Length: 71
Image 1: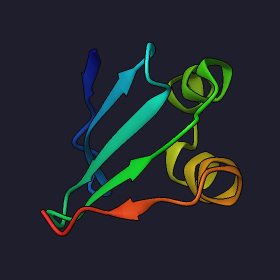
Image 2: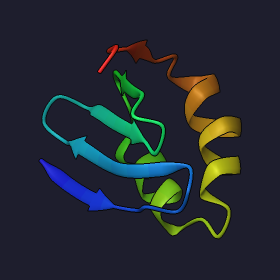
Image 3: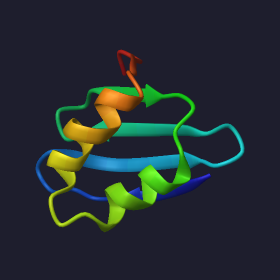
């Protein structure tokens, strides 16, 4: 599983499990979402975006509705 620490005021860190196609998102607020069946292309797009929050909200959330893991 690949983990990236962001700490930009919105995200805290992201984890991507390529074998299970799962994106784990921990927000600065402490909230934790799990997205299923995420395409690696979209994960790379998120990491390489100059506006990660916008990419997350416009692409990831719309294509891969999350499960709120309640911490």
